Length: 202
Image 1 (cartoon, rainbow, N blue to C red):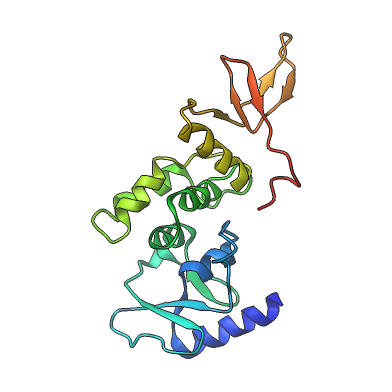
Image 2 (image 1 turned 60 degrees about the horizontal axis):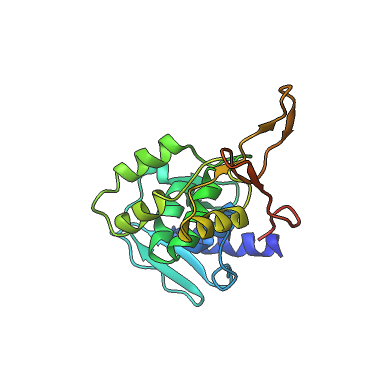
């Protein structure tokens, strides 16, 4: 259960002084992840380089420096910030999955960050491991999406040579009345695309 998991995370971070990070932080933030990776049986903890690496059963220890604004202290545990978590995933996720996670950061409802904050964060990571891959994904990340499936469809369309569609661009009738905000659209061609499903569940 969620409470049992949080108790385990709290105990591990209390004993080790580590910060919940990588895939474990991604799960806590609700990032869309491939089913094969969304596994909280294995916990990822990051410690400062000066401390001993965390060695426990079903725990992956990472050693790296975290800036103060890259750690968010929760009621139960401290974990890496959404931006830092996304950047750390660059070494684990495919480019498409990294783009879906990036779109999730900038989603239309309850975004976890802004485009400006993402770009400023990445500017400070130039030359760090994962930077090039993160920048490849950043070039494809778009704000204001509603679901990972919408992102997946957009990437599929552009990969097959179609121009990039508009994202949730409102459509109005000739009298100026709002009709809908289709998931994806080609305004000039008058094509609207809706991704069906229980609101684009993963």
